[in-house]
Amino acid sequence: MAPAIQLRRVTKRFLTPKGGVYTAIRDLSLQVAPGEFCALVGPTGSGKSTTLALISGLEPPSEGEVEVFGKPVTGVGHNIGYVFQADAVFPWKSVLDNVAAGPRYRGASKREARERAQDWISRVGLAGFEDRYPHQLSGGMRKRVALAQTLINSPEVLLMDEPFSALDVQTRTLMENELLQLWAASSASVVFVTHDLEEAIALADRVYVLTAGPATVKGNYAVDLPRPRNVAEIRFQPRFDEIYQEIWSDLRDEVLVSYERQKRIGAA
Amino acid sequence: MSVRSASALPEAAAAPERAGGRRALAARRRRLMVNGLRLLVLVVWIGSWELTTRIGLVDKFFFGMPSGIVQRLWTWITEGTALGPLWEQVLVTMEETVLGFLVGSVLGIILGIALGRNRLLADVLSPYIKAANSIPRVVLGALFAISLGLDLKSKVATASILVFFVVFFNAFQGVREVDRNLVANARILGADGRRLTTEVIIPSALSWIAASLHISFGLALVGAVVGELFGATEGVGELIYNAKNNFDANGVFAGMALLAVVALVAESLITALESRLIKWRPNPVTDVAI
Image (cartoon, rainbow over all chains, first blue to last red; front, side, top):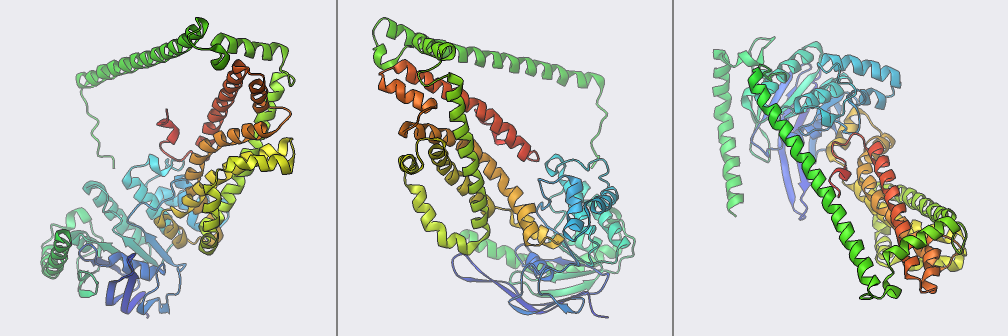
């Protein structure tokens, strides 16, 4: 069976506004099995978001191959879901219309789309808020809207770019648990980008550590913690600590490199 | 999300309530004071104007006189103007303004969005648009008076050309400033190019466009009045022009007062329209406007 996501020696360069070339990713290879929950961790500015953009088809790679379910990615695929780091729900649409947007764009009738949206709104615990506009909701509730908006399309590949980084700690733990439940009910393969190693281990089956930019894979670690997991409690298991130690020794070097670099830029 | 504790003691809850009551009282007092001071400014302004012209310190032939202006308005209302009944003049100017506003803003929105969406078109046309924007466009009113005649058409054209550029630049900028994340999200969710325009680009540009409608309605009024000054047979601008030819300062001021009333009414209508168009926005700009 083909892996759900396969990146082979992928390089991505961007033109900077000054006309220079910035390499975000160099020679990066990774693989995600169908139904696997995979986390990408790395220091800030290490091309994690760029990796997601390549898998989603929003950006083409400069070199190398990106495949989803064995097929090369040529544009935005229909089986992709993407939860963005920043708020990306439509501020001029009510909660109901935000969640119904995906099915509408994919050709469902207004009635059908709204019925399905209603169902997803209850599933993410927002029943009763259908008519609100995003600015009337808290940050955590907006994230729930974004989750429902994405999951309603039943994506086979779910990309998440630090989705919970803007939330407070309690809300975040709640959302992480809910994400795990929703994911368990689907068969989606997940790529979850975060800079928080604890979050990565608590959620994922496999953790990829990326180097300080240009990003390439420094190492990958299987997380053999049992499921179903409770994110709030799993951190106290001895095995969690062992895995954390192991990955952190790798990640620490990269974080230091990135930090030194930023200091130099700051000093210059 | 529901980690808020709701176990406030009664006496603890009463204190903030009292404080809230005091604050409401202070706010009410402040509002009263502001309104009182506003009235004072008006009385001092009009009063000193009336007084200085009455005792001859200021020549009422050039500067008019508040009581004379009121009298002139009253005559216009009760006996009609030299051009016919007053309401007809106001209506004519309103018609020119509204039509010019509609034509200008519709063209501005369509072209602004088209150019905002099409890079090539924008690059090709931008020098011409910038050049056209830099000339004082009111003088086109003279041209329109020649080519379109003295009736409605020339005023609508003058008004719409003034409105067009303001709305156009705002619509264009609005399209350019659309949040990249929202576009990416819509594409991932399955939106095609047409959906992207109608569901993301236009709603997002609407707040820019709506902000420009306030300014552009005022400009439409300017266009209509200037068009009338260049040559007309009726309208408030023509009334002012007539008064000027008769060295009637009071008549000019009375015309200005009429235009001010028209502009204020229109402003409140636009505000209502804006809050309908973008009811999803937390704080409409009009909240902070004076």
